[in-house]
Image (cartoon, rainbow, N blue to C red; front, top):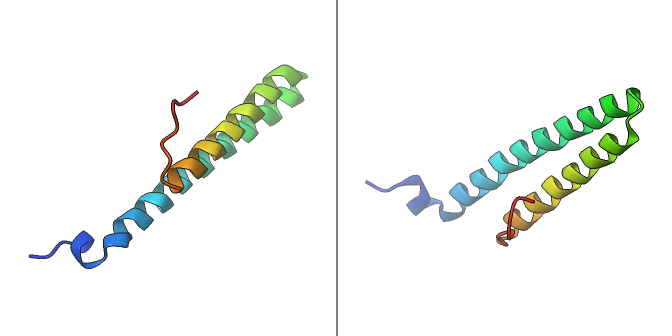
Amino acid sequence: MLSLHAIFPHYTRAYYIIANMNDATHEIQREFEQAQKARTNGNEGQARVCARRAAGIAIRDYLLRNGIRPPSRS
């Protein structure tokens, strides 16, 4: 029996990319929400930390989608 990957070799890669994009999008959104809460509470420093984390998540997602393995999660 043929697998889906054998019939559509790019399908599983595309599915992986889309699934991870959704994960990254949710992570980025969560960081933006935390940044907004920090700003509302007058904590600009924490808001900047959240913004940097969101940028890191976006960069990591971009690298992974382009076949580049990031050196670490930090």
